[in-house]
Image (cartoon, rainbow over all chains, first blue to last red; front, side, top):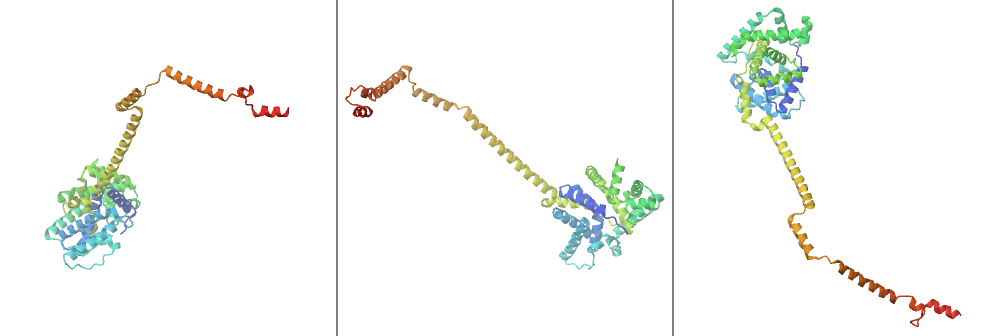
Length: 196
Length: 181
């Protein structure tokens, strides 16, 4: 899986700078961008999904408090990742629980989502909802026109940048941008009634 | 219009946004908080496509974070910023007030020098009254007496007394010349 990191770090840096200057909405963007990954990460330590959500929230709050001292020596997500792990561990210690001693490495931050043990940890309601969402998304993808499907698959599965996708599909970058967006809109049309 | 913003959200999640576009997106999100829900749904899609499993944040995940941060104003960055601003404002205000007071003090002191007040004017008038200016005749009399004194002095020290021998005393030069004869 190939990940484009250059622009990511730059945008995060810009958002962090804005938060440090007092722009709260920039922090909201960072939360929305990373909330799912952080919840997933915390879920590896804290098995209860609702507790995991609380711990993830606490991790974001801690990050916000510490942001004035964040110098940008490491990428924002790596920094946030460390905070989340420490928060989860502290939470378990405070609750005197034993947690699985996963050797979660900083370099593995992007791979956290592939942990198979995440499945089956949710409550029946969560699982049902989860299955429904997965089904709706897959169905919507299947119904996408071929060029849109290819563009979104290359982006989400392969992690290619717009430029690389444009090269692969032999079309301008603007077209790729538009195709990916239209694919998302088509899926969102089916997904939003379920999530709202 | 929303289509354009939604596309920017899509690009943001793919890290394909420029810094200028990011600023624009931030402004739009401030105006339309609903866009955060859109962003959230896009994220759920990504999760499902990447791992066949939807990791969803609770409804109000972000709101809860914001609420907790608001309950702890000491840690809220904008509040710190506000404090800093207030501190700067008070510093500037106090400087401005101090400068104004100094200016007023200088102006007042200059005015008091240039335009003496009533009390000082009265004092000067009373002094002038107390010291009467001598009339012209008195001045002339005084001058005459001075002249007489000068005259007496000059007469007392006049060389003619010696030269005419009226005092039976001769100047040293004359005695010497007689001796030679």
